[in-house]
Length: 338
Image (cartoon, rainbow, N blue to C red):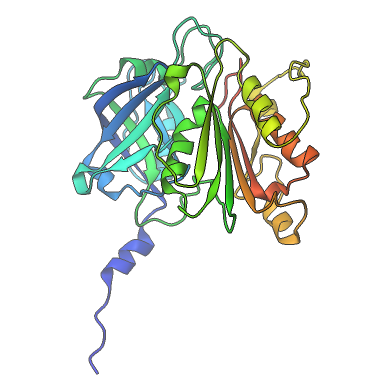
């Protein structure tokens, strides 16, 4: 019997890092609504970009105050160290975004990102900097033109666990997807990638009716839009979701505790990670809490919205916390970390 040839591709796969760093250029810009700018990024190295789907996130690095970008040399860890070593007044801005889409193949592969943007006269932050004024990512997206440069840290198609995907429906039969405009790109991707046999509801709050952007159609998931208009972020959405869950109306205008730092408003509780340091997988194995009739809930957006719905599901309905992903993407009036 002739020995099987060595599969060198397997060796390459095992050696590949979870992610990689590469410079990219803007190849297309589209203002798809008042609150959303869609930007397509390209680079030959994106041939190795993994299309993991669902709510996969990546790091976007934008030119700092002096216009400098760190050179993407060495390993991901070495590059991060070089970024941290940049002087504070020169350090490039780093933000986290959802992969809205991956299109094309080979060196023509492209990364599509939907940016939430706002005008100068708004009253809350959406990309890491508090108003008045607009933050660096929003400013960059509003002024971006083909040829503009950035750097991305993205998952490798032959890499090990990227660690940047929270959606984990498991054996759930139904989905409950809830989010504001900052969660729309992730929910859009989830709708595109979710098992077509799943059923469920998606509730989305956006600033105005014109921001009800086209979404992928899922045969079993009904989408409901809520427009915020001049109301508090999340208030109308919380009221609607409570009603849909059969919960009584409550006073949503009650004063909230003062917020001191970004750490005080951080809320991130998924099967992969808990900002409180708890082991939710152990809770899932123990069968603690209700499973909401086989439903997996994914909730993301402004911190007050996420915390309020977390209380509704976990405290009032006693839903198993390991069957719900809660993610605070931003906080009204507070500068969040990169």
